Length: 79
Image 1: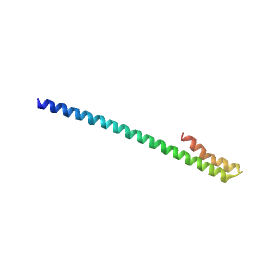
Image 2: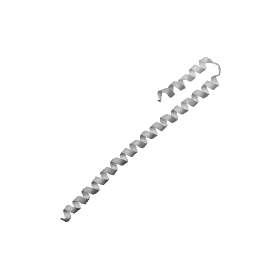
Image 3: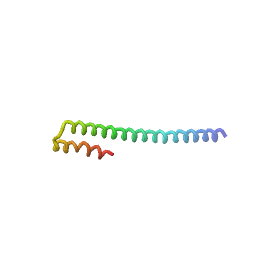
Image 4: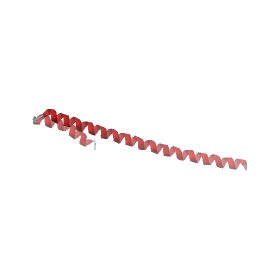
């Protein structure tokens, strides 16, 4: 009878540990996805700032303004 009780307790503990492991894996995946999205957003903001600075420096020169459009296109590609 003690063997049966011990076996039941061991099975119960294994089930609890297994469920906790999956939850930790899911949380880790969620954090990684959020970190990746945050990095993309930061890069977009940086590109937009670079675009603004480039346009400001270009002034009235249309060729330079058109060259600055590469920053804007790169930011659009990160959406």
